[in-house]
Length: 152
Image (tube, rainbow, N blue to C red):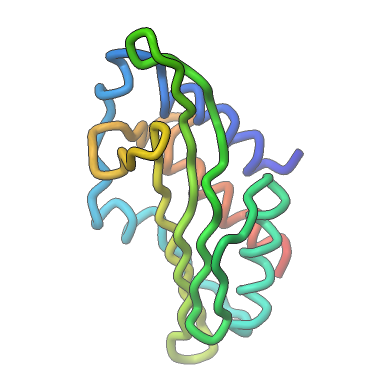
């Protein structure tokens, strides 16, 4: 299991807890994604695209949409936890929207935006994110980008 897969598994416990705790996290602001969910590498865009796709697939995400030309990768939703909403069972899912773009001087930028769902309901704009700590989003991004770097 890759470092990212292990971190993602641990984060699923703190990110999506059952019941009221689900809504006790933080909001995911664009500044958070810009600061922690963005990574710049010195490699050809094609190679970066393959490394990101490979990393996501290695941790069990199916690729739903990919366009190397447009620099877009979107994963399918992946079940990360089953729980209850009142008396009704619900599945909690995670997916990624990735943007890969060329910068100057041979640099390539990766922006990884996570999304979370309860059933079909997108919770990503709510206060559901655990940002800090060994199981938080910042650590997930750090591990994701380390795994990508290892493939470059």
